Length: 143
Image (cartoon, rainbow, N blue to C red):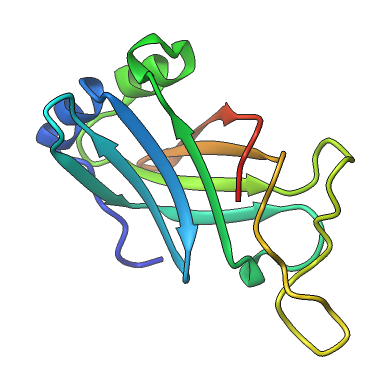
């Protein structure tokens, strides 16, 4: 994805004081939506990755949320490590628990339409120049 948000000092300050953080993939767009206590919203364009059954490029949508990021140890670690110039990627992992049939993807007539990820995982990857750091933030991803 060529239009990734390159984080600035202002973005990082907003992220560190977030009241909610939403992670979305829909219609080919991967975004991180950060909301402040005053209701202001910051939308960051993120990269997209998928591991699991089928071809991840055919995922229709995925969603995860951190309701209280100020109390989430993993999110606080991520927010503290962010630096100006970093970019973010969301890596979705399908059917990691064996309970959900995730082999349903939009595609040819023989493949049923994929409805979205459910009970799977999402990792946030920070690209720091040539280095990457990955954090598992969500174990239960809703569609």
